[in-house]
Image (tube, rainbow, N blue to C red; front, side, top):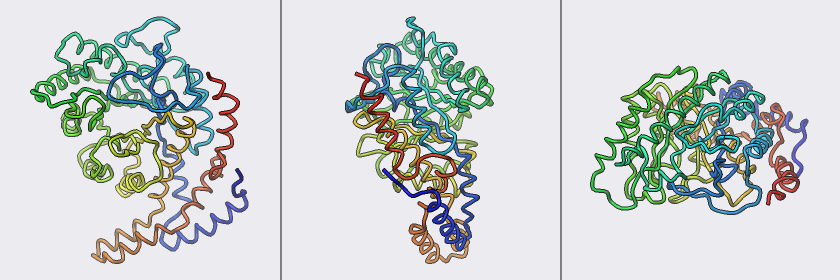
Length: 424
């Protein structure tokens, strides 16, 4: 699949640069800024959220991977190999987001409340070799002690204690990762707790969750090594009527306990805008964590694309001058397509949305708004949509030495034939 050559890219970029300059936008500065944006790529997209504890498929926890496209990573080594190919097709330097269930125990049976940094040694060595950071998530699903639908908010004290210990171990693992790699590891906590039908005592469940979280975060951690974050959920399979860790719950907890709030683009009602929430929260929090996914009807975990909601998220971050205050990660899984394609599409789409925002003539629009010249503001917003953003994106890919346009598909298809289709 051929695309434009380097000479054409440079010529197109030169013309685009002049077009944007007419609106007061410096494309060279935008590309320099974009090159410093790091997005955390999710490990679970590469193996359908199965992990490496010995299971053959995802089980429970209100999430489900559908499809049976061949080539799912079956081992951590295969997953790392697949991720490396994806990184080679994505411009920029990025991160990798792990779950606790992606431990490597050397065949030894180690339950989640006994995990240690040594069980992620290979991941740390791999990240060190690539020069990337790692983020981490304790895993509260696909486990017998999560079968009831409740973990940190369970009425059973032994169940709660087990999951509290797992979360504590995850913080220790995250701290070790951050220290080893020299970049803070975001330790993001999400639980599936909830019920299929209306509960009697919502308050008790949430009181138990507060109690568990306070115990988990009781010991302070070095924020240069680990950043604690809590993530809400709208609902999931088996928790359609009630979710303990709702947006409002975790918003209150994050603000009162000084931990990061994680917002997932797919964890809100269809008419809610994650972009709107960004500017509403930034006056009150130092930093935010965003998980980017694409909700389709009730399902939240489709591959990120360069659509209006994703572009709006990028615009709100850039308009607020908050690229250094918002941590970006992708969160999707689709077992019906090539998983490396999913990674590349999702990551490149996220970066396109950020570039889109960096190229916006925001100063002109802000000036018009302040002068209450709203017609000019609207006109600029509309004219901007037709500016040659694609020519600037091609220049970014050329400078970052990754394939232009859809040319990356050739390498994925070849890898699929040589590697993935042989994983039977």
